Image 1 (cartoon, rainbow, N blue to C red):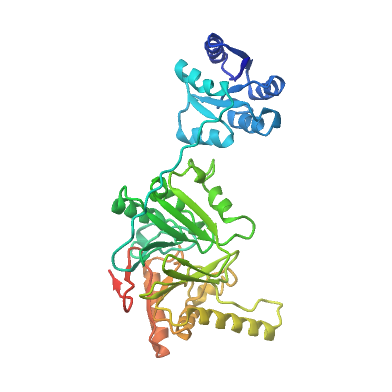
Image 2 (image 1 turned 60 degrees about the vertical axis):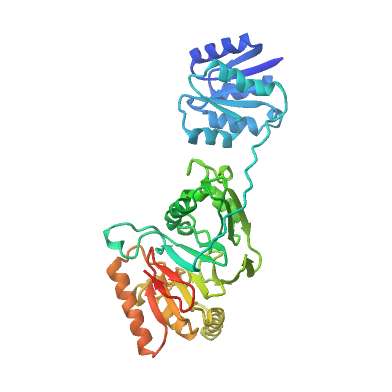
Amino acid sequence: MKTVLIIDDDADCRRVLGAILNQYGWQVFHAGNGDEGIELARQHRPRVVLCDLLMPRVNGFKVCQELRADATLRQTGIVVTSGRNFEADRRAAMEAGADDFLPKPVETNQLVSALARFETNDPPPAPEKPQEIPTRISGTPRLKFWGVRGSTPAPGPGTVEYGGNTSCIEIRAKGELIVLDAGTGLRLLGRQLAGEFKDQPLSLTILLTHTHWDHIQGLPFFQPIYQPQNRIRILGYEGARHGLSSVLSSQMENPFFPVALRELPANVQIEELKELKFSIGRVRVETCFANHPGICVGYRLFTGESSIAYFPDNEPHFIANGVDPKAAAEYVQGQERRMISFLRGVDILIMDAQYDRDEYQKHIGWGHACLDDVVALAIKAEVKKLFLFHHDPDHDDAKITAMTAYSRKLVKEQNGKLQVEAAREGLVIDLVGAAQVVR
């Protein structure tokens, strides 16, 4: 016997749907609210539950969740109906456990067709994503800044020169397209890539330093993840409490975002890194843990033409209160030597320089750097070019320009050769030779 339970607070709707299904051989049970529907489903174990989405007290999402949590109802099909035909509602219903979604008023053909699939126990085959050969990245090796701000986006008239988007850098080298962090600058990069490559299959790798929001919030708005021909690898280290995949998925779950990560058309692979040295194609990558809350790293990439180090969030180690000063000083010196060794001779260093000296005194222990310390570190490590990065959201263009001038003054006072510049959106760096700036 084909049995269906209709759960809907609209009596007229229940009557019409029930009459239609009776004509097609279905035995129909009725419930006027979610609580009653859940109880009748457990009592009669129907083949299908036809449930309205918007009901008082217990809505359709909750009904789906309750039925899916009941082991005796795992073979029961669930079809959600709703007078609102939003794609976000459809996806949310599927996430809650529904098998299908029908907008109201429900047409007879759609209703009969939707329930016909449950007359057998064979699940419909899952669609396969097309496999295509990715387009090879060509052209002059380069680096481009798409987001340079820290903590939170800072749009407005005061940030036009340097930009207000959060961390995102594009690197093209050795046929690879590598993206450092997925802040809000990733949206602009995605628009550019979509226009450049159009329908050509694209392969790229996103390296995450950590999963604080300003480093991942651009991912849901990255156009290439909505194109089925693309292959996107997201690499990073496991967080302190949740795995990388869980963290990235959670920001795209309902009710925070209408499209779930697992539903993206592109082939998206999330991989947790275990080693501190690995390769992306012919680009060699080394990793160093940064001094920042949670699991946070910096990267050094060797492209053949030059080397690039990226530490968007890092605070030089400091002596905490209550710690033996001598032991603490030895530890801090050891950590500084470790960082200097990692950065030694790098062509381009992109580093957190969020605070000036006075500001830093109020932010010690926050995980971000003082400008003076960053310049001193770069000089000791014999860095060729330093880009000040992770600009404070409260710093306007004039402040960043002043910090840059102050940095150059520090270098001059020490007779250093270090070149200093503030990172700005749209800035392109030629990675061949002396790392020239292309404006």
